[in-house]
Image 1 (cartoon, rainbow, N blue to C red):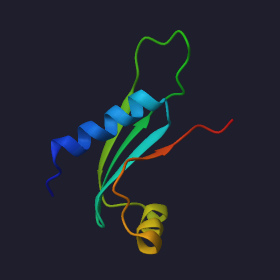
Image 2 (image 1 turned 135 degrees about the vertical axis):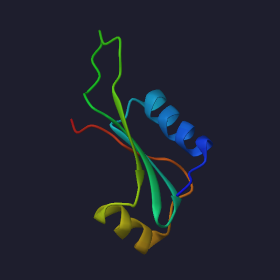
Image 3 (image 1 turned 45 degrees about the horizontal axis):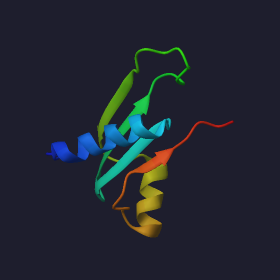
Image 4 (image 1 turned 30 degrees about the vertical axis):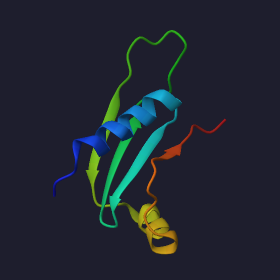
Length: 81
């Protein structure tokens, strides 16, 4: 399983620039790249912890791929208010 570094960089950059909770990039129907914040960012935060996951999509993501096909852009999930 090889994933281009550009896909990883785009996913992490989209997460950091948007302030979202999770960014998901569908490389193909069977591989996703996910960047997830560990904590909700605060105004005085100096660091950001990010968990990077590369692998098979989970059940919800497989359902999206099955219904609509793999999106070409980075999909963002925001925090609930």
